Image 1 (cartoon, helix red, strand yellow):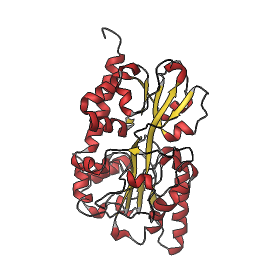
Image 2 (cartoon, one colour; image 1 turned 135 degrees about the horizontal axis):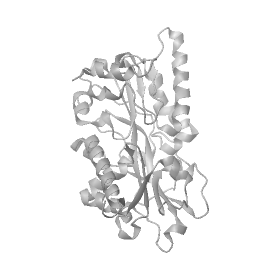
Image 3 (cartoon, one colour; image 1 turned 30 degrees about the vertical axis):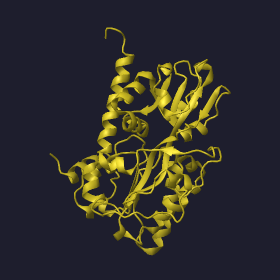
Image 4 (tube, rainbow, N blue to C red; image 1 turned 120 degrees about the vertical axis):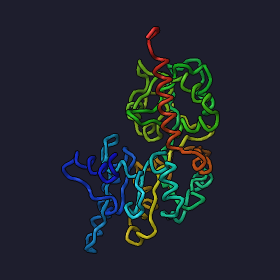
Length: 343
């Protein structure tokens, strides 16, 4: 078996312009795709400003949303000295894996640096890590987009539990593309209702669609009457009059945007920490990702809230392994349901 360094080098060899070794990075940043260009512009400005010191900040922001990246195996690292000063990522992925968490997060390699003010809605949702390790600087909130014409006499759902009702059979278009899926939605169903809830949800699903396609396909002939998609795509696309954006009464199902930072890398990385805690929320399109320090979108209902698994649950299981299992299970159930009879 290849060593971790050999594995990363072989991936990097796919690109003629190989990036620096992880330990030479001040930040590795997996950004949400819809705001990636705006984020990259601001981070590059911070890095450019640091050049005056004669020791410029080194950052890497993978630009492909689903492409192979030379740092993908980084979660397998065993030496804390070989980790970047900041690791920022999306969803319940590799840096939540039990092995990585036990080796580095629980061992105190990282220390949270929070903004001076946290939006009350996100404070109530329990976003700050009580152990002071992870910083959830924003969220991908998943909501409903309803096609009232296609639903007909069936009332739109009001809560996540409603989607387990058989009256929505064949109506649900789930956010998913390639190996990615709305991880928070499946994990929340699994937490609250067990595998039975996941199976009931899958039984009502019609298809998997990329989020960007969902936002543009309202009323499409091949789609069901309900879409589960990120708030960004629901609100950033012009919809026909028969489409309704609905925030679930029990809360948008939220997937974390988070970072981990090494205290020993400060104060060098402070300008990058300021980006997460201050500047990210100033990007107009980033407001749909509910930045920890606000401001939030004007269209968000006053009584809006978010639901997510919570820190106790995340630390009680290998949430990344659960995500992978639920992803595969949901896809399998959907394939089996849509398979032609006798196949």
